Image 1 (cartoon, rainbow, N blue to C red):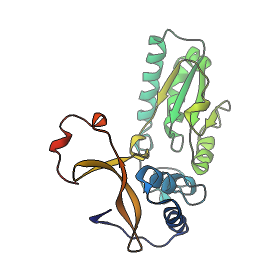
Image 2 (cartoon, helix red, strand yellow):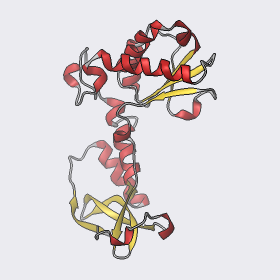
Image 3 (cartoon, rainbow, N blue to C red):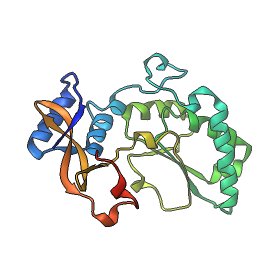
Length: 224
């Protein structure tokens, strides 16, 4: 079921060809699956194949956006002070995971580690783990953190050692794939990406949310 006025077009890239083939074979895909393909596809994904972050350094001109760590080293240094305070509040464990999810170019962690020089016991107990899916950004992180050779990289949090952890995630939620549900007639159906008249378009899947899964007041929400 297409929704009026929500169609979108694009240049027919190799990734779009692949998405179209997937839709033709399996039917409309969730917005989450669409986002995963666009952002982290191994050959065509935005984060896996480009230099998304601007700021200072060799890739400054090619970045599309900038985040706080690239503006001032003070941001990462303050996060470092916060981490040391949290470590104290945790009882100063002899070993803990310092985890950053989506570390960008490694700028925040580089500044954080510099500020942690003020507390050698913190650095000795720290085990640094970075969660990153982009080979391009991993290479930049390795350049930024070459003075900390014990850093370990993971594609997801499942590989983290089971020990006390301090987790940092700066500007991460806006890049996480999500699922979306839309009120249509009397039901809430999942919004998806399908093909309508040969174009990629937002459509509704037949799967529905059970009334018990819906928040209070859902019945008063407008159509669409």
